[in-house]
Length: 358
Image 1 (cartoon, rainbow, N blue to C red):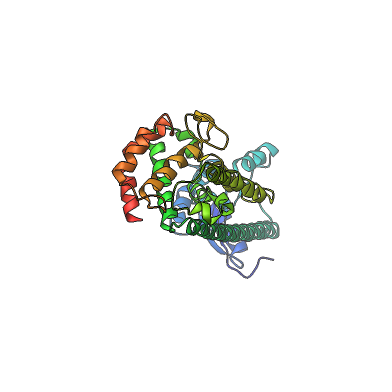
Image 2 (cartoon, rainbow, N blue to C red):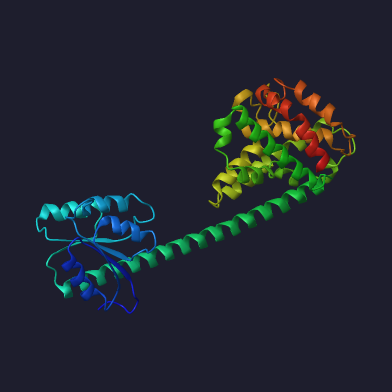
């Protein structure tokens, strides 16, 4: 028999005798609301949400089929289970009701025991579905929380590695913060100006910013005597310095072999492999030219050179923001993608503000 929980049942029928009989059958087990019309049903629904509706089909005004369609069209009521209670016995009538979304079909005059059992079964099923949905929602939340923890750990590890790399290059962690701010500003402006916007919109910004920190990963293989030499590198030393690109790519490819964080590592490899390529083809390590250079590399080329210009290094004094911007702009079509330089022009003051703040 029904559980001890007092579920709310609404019985809608224009026949007073049916309402009286239904209430007598149901009230021992349920909280029952007897309503003589669909109009009354919708008035009551504004104040009480039932666990199940018993709905007659043939009623003056709005009939049962129309009432069910209205219920299903309203997000507030669409999940309330509805059982048709009707004198119609034709199979087509039953199929029509079920097609509209009714969960069952009980004919009048109905058996009290049969009606109670039908209601009990459907409420039990509804309860199980609710519990299953709650379990699914809780499981999804747990997965999302664990995923966030994994990404948080990933970001912490990457940031630490990047800071260690920068500390070897006599640059503080502010260099990392600046580059990420430059990158975010530049990508946002690309989208606003509809310049390479389709590709930029496909990036997840958090993943893009995090992965960009590994663009100089290969510098870990370069000796301090070359990395921090207080003067111009010899031709031989410069050739050694250039190997950091391929060393970084090789390290990222080893990470890819584990099969995790594919999107993150794909972006990281693009940054690492191509940020020293030049628009005119005179860059390294592969001499890529124009749009054969991935967009990640073309963007990082501007960011990396700009930040190197405004930063003091063992072999040079820091340039001013104006002078650094002028060099970037003059490099359009040679070192840098002209379309990206046009976007950079709009951001020169923003880049200067970022450099000063960080």
